[in-house]
Image (cartoon, rainbow, N blue to C red; front, top):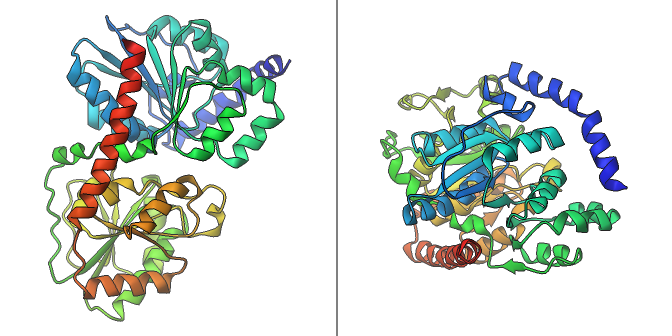
Length: 422
């Protein structure tokens, strides 16, 4: 009954979804041509041979699967890979990483409607399927089961809030989840939640995001950032609306102690860059919008990074990083961005109290004195000043420990895939 109702709603909301996608295209949040892949059937030429299909929502999830794809690309040149994503930013990252690779393909995930799904499977005919994190689409899952395909739910995450919703429809949820062959969970809480729906093959090795591929730093050109050594510089990553003001206020406090301070801000969504510039100018701060090939202006105080794929460069050059979506109370139930890459590159990570999406990770990093929970601008400024004055350095022992832990998780995940495709 619920399956019928779900499909009825899918039909009802298809037209509004069309308008929604077209609106996003108008405001440059969708690809100029590929946006059609979300709403219309598309005919493609499937590559010959074995095809892995990975579905991710956005950049964070895409980074999770890159080392897995790279491993199998190097292991067997006959293997092919399809990546489906939802966001434009994740497509841009795909282009940067695999745009010239003829073994890795991309398509935006179609709407969860029967006629689009049938077209998708007729085209691609995948051999093994991976959905990452909390991406659960009922009709896709049913089609995967109908085609008797192995489905891996990788880095599965079912929060308390989501679990309570699925519990209301336990029979329907159990039917959806029965499509999953292996669930590799991101935390122990999800293990318990999935077990409630009678899933059998549930694994927990640690959060797969620890395995993000730091090798991509080797592809970043001009790693050195041209800022004079006598400047005190820190970096804010993945900031959301309201957090840029918080960072600017921290900057103003730092200026009372140091004459030369620069604050680098890398917003989560760069389409907001002009709005952020307006606010910074209103606060009286000399602000530069830095595009990929621009040098940093010597006279600027705030540098807004206006391109994707830059974070490794800044992790490499700076020791103190604030990671956003964590300081404002509006993020209480859905806060946190991935701190693992910054930690693995030896940065000391600051975060706010609202990090529910990465609670287990931050608890571990805090316990290892790799990160610190701050809840207001004065505390962050105080800790930044303390670290500046003590000439904070990157701790190689901590980096090695994290990398060893990451490698252990990665090899366990790879073994699961090898068991399936054997």
